[in-house]
Image 1 (cartoon, rainbow, N blue to C red):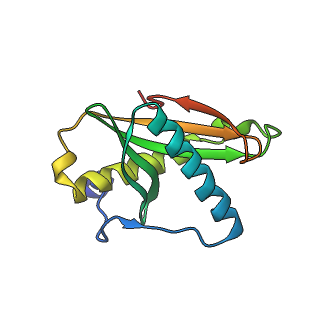
Image 2 (cartoon, rainbow, N blue to C red; image 1 turned 90 degrees about the horizontal axis):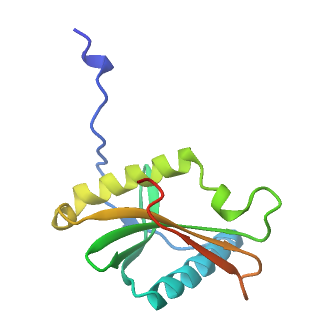
Length: 140
């Protein structure tokens, strides 16, 4: 009787796709993602994939930390005038990221049984020498 009230299963007919930076702002974001990736690789993480998108969200970096699959949101701000990079990760942004993670698992069943977490890498300052903060397991 109230079938319309049921929350639909998150599905996305289009598979995950890779995106590339085109605009100047996107190029800065791509540079921030490259810096974050290099920082995490120095910490022992292994890059699996990057820049994955579906119609409902994006995954900036996908890495392995030991046996744990890590979905990483990279945020960069030139300064902390409006709260900084970490503060720019809103609940709405996390919801989009988690939805993209669900679509990823639907398209990549081999990873479904892998332990996973969501991290944020926040960069602040000039991209030539940013301060990098790695926030682990932001949803847990």
